[in-house]
Image (cartoon, rainbow, N blue to C red; front, side, top):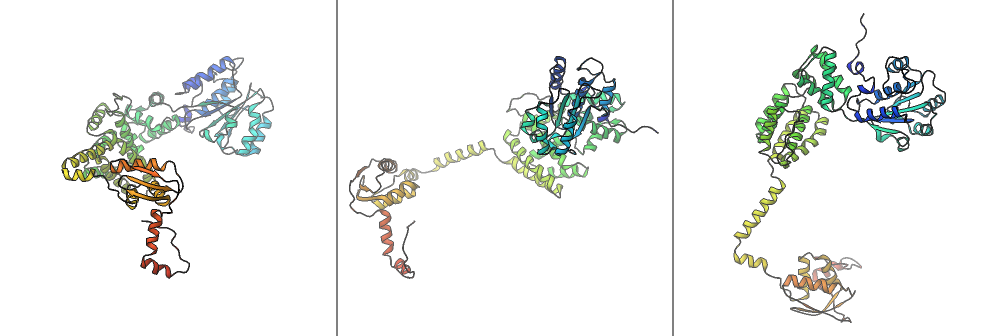
Length: 513
């Protein structure tokens, strides 16, 4: 009976620093540190899943304990007893701990107690704590002191995908390395090499789709490749990968966006029906549309970014995008992008994705037809100019006619019409008008505001088109303010007097217009 099949992600796991793909800075730093003897007592590796955090930890453990040299080496042999045991996860001095299942302080106390003893077979005791952010607060606190000053023979290697959940007190005691997403081209080369090793036919287009779907994760990409091989029997082409990913061919997406941006709602919905009936995942279609919008924006002539050769589209497809860009504005692309981003959560939570997608298409078409903000402003300015041209001379004179203020009440009314609320409130409540004529006001200010004459004079000059003389009296003439006069007029009104008589101790506390 043949042995169990080993998935590609495990079979081709990196066994040395040279095998770590896409992490050049990390490899250079660690190998230099080992060669120069500057080995830290604690490391923390962070990054998205599948970029090599645990693999790097195992390789570092090999480098520290390899028997091919008298001390740590940047090139572990992989053949000695220690290297083979570490690769198999069976070395007595290299402990891999899953923090998700060992979260408590008691688990951490057992580890720290054991760390005091010297290694049995290796030079160092290496503790690899995976998903360290899952530890409890008590466990982190128990780890602090030992992590800062561990025994000379102990190395801690922490790994996490959620670096923000790790306390700063832990981070400050470790050398931190951020593992980056592996570039698409690097993944493609890696997948091609693996396909050769496995005698698999992998087309370049299919390889590109797998590498982009991996989103920078080597393990995710190898899992997808494994699935594609199992589905096709070893002949992996574009159609097989598209069917597996439930994605639509990019040529179809380009044609669909061209129809959508043309404003033909009927044709766009008909294309959606066809794509949906062919088994495409509408959420993936939305992601493909967002990808198209992103690259169309990058390629728009307004940005002057030049030819984008890193886009996932063929030369013919890029030419079609350029033709579409010649007819639409950058603002239109920005607006439809915003609508698409908002629709992602709607699609994921909708009980009927087809209905949700149809409404999204209709919304996108109407958004695309809307004029941009500069166009709206330009149109408004043109309308304003045209309106001014059509106005007659008499109408213009009416518009420019200055207000006539001949009484204290006229002044109060004009202040209120002009929405000079503060000036109106102060004038009507605190100013006793002793004498009022056209161009001259003699008054007494109950609160003696030094800024009032200047503000009122400036407003009168602007409103009436002439200068006014404001004379302030030093003593009150016991004249009523505008508000007091209005209140007295209201109190003497027969209707108000009749209403007041209906309620005992009723009083007027304010007057508003």
